[in-house]
Image (cartoon, rainbow, N blue to C red; front, side, top):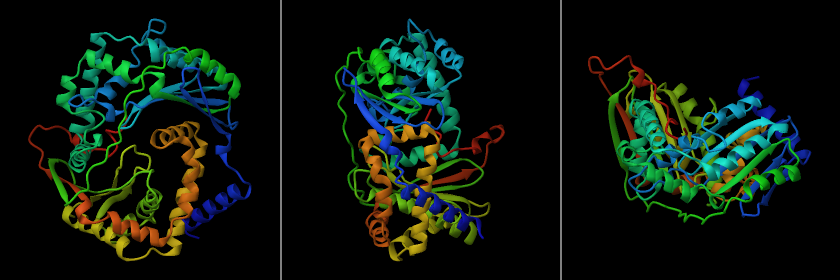
Length: 460
């Protein structure tokens, strides 16, 4: 039996078991409000004596002020500069002393801070996060240090990485009215421009209970944990809720193209189409289309472009269901040595046209649905991932909407696939990004510029 077939059968049997037993891990999810109005989302799970404690702020790069891109990302670094009670390295030390781990991330739509600890130690991160939400201290010297760190990050992860640089230029070409036009790490000129006062104003504006929520996932007693959270966070003034807008680019009226000439080993090709997000009925159809094209080595892009036509080293598709503003549906590929970007672009367009012109078969459609459902089920093994998924839904449309994911995926039909492809995947709505390699100049280095990552600019 082929591995792919075995995997599908295993996934189907697992999903049948989940459904037949009426298993719904979301039945253990609930929310509460603190006395200051701050929302807390709970998801109890007894699989292991561990808790993931997460604080999410609606304060991503979409909230950077015009001409001050990168501010949200710089501020994430500043959140570890300490308070009067917990100076600088003491935060790290206290989490390590209880055997926990921590991290933070900034994207277009949010900034998030989380700690994963043993259940009996959850009070430690609760107190630490509440303290720095209201008592953070950072000097001008602290600010300048972290700004330089982010600028160096930008050099290493974007400017010196041809693929990352291409993605940045491609997004800036595709998005005109939406804040996805600029990268979370910021433009270099903007990073040079932002100052200590900007960071203080960002803190006062966005880092308050009115603009944040808490997610707790794992082995805990809700009433006891809520009481500790109320004691730590409940007295923090709610603050004025910042004004948030939803942005949408006007309809694109013709293909846009951007070509980047950089030192690189191979070309790279990206195709992007403006599509809706979770708020639209077509969103789950697009999710299934992404799986049809790119979910594993039996998916269309790998099977047809990598194996069949032997044009590419890799090929895939990506769709951001949970973006706050409408995203791009993206196809991307890296050609084999000796193959050109033009050939690869034509092959990607051919796959898009196939979606528009030929109905997908029942077996292939069911396989894509099974893969999405299996990934959703297996994602429950990670407490952090469960918390992140709840938070991403909360930011996009409200956490309760996660309950609609599997039913919506199951309802997608072959007619839906063809209708949605016809609606969005046409040349007028397309932005193309091409990386064209140039020869390295003498003394330009050891080739480290060829190790670009598509996702380098998304998170810190």
